[in-house]
Image (cartoon, rainbow, N blue to C red; front, side, top):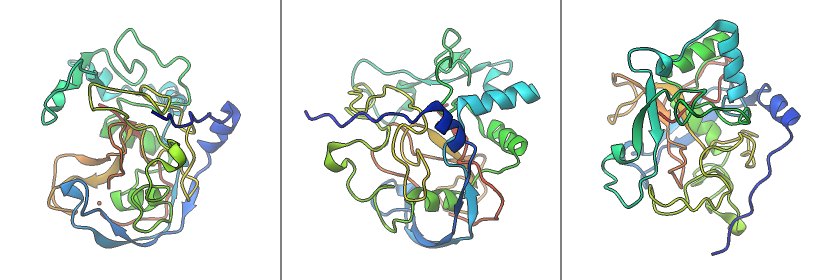
Length: 274
């Protein structure tokens, strides 16, 4: 099998510059959702968003550590009585894909600074996206940073990078010239991870090329929070939780669906695996 080229990260100094420099997204009208992928993305429909700011990269461990050090904030995963979070645990054989508990396992002591459990750490992973961040945690970080989470429509509009109707953030071919352009899953999910893109789990936020708006990681690497409520009935319905964008490692296409904007700076949504 031909392996895709393993991308190289940019220098740490450039990562620091990119993660602090938001991009102006001009807004516009686009075809949101999809009739060919997950049922909750249908029906595809026209949506208009105003211009807005978005951070170039997902929030990194370095950025979130600064927030915690300056505020003393304790994430939901770190709080008693549970003090735990879900960790992806690769099964040894094929499992029933209807049961996510076959690969998402609640692990005591797992949190943003101990992503795999109490004996793990983020040392050497400053430029990787922060994980194990609940919606409340994302809101608190956004407030501290003077920003807000994007709506789902803003997120999808930005993820498309100006390519109307394209399947991916870079066009309609998932692996052009046998090159991987995002940190996604290769192999039979969830028991076979071929790691052909060079990464077993998360990757540095600038490891792969940006999209047409100069935004990184709009496909792959981690899930990202948006400000919308989730509902299989569409936008506007009441629901108990906010929507997380499925640009996850297990995906081999992009996912998305609805709303509008205000011109305040935005986070490229905080990330979470749990």
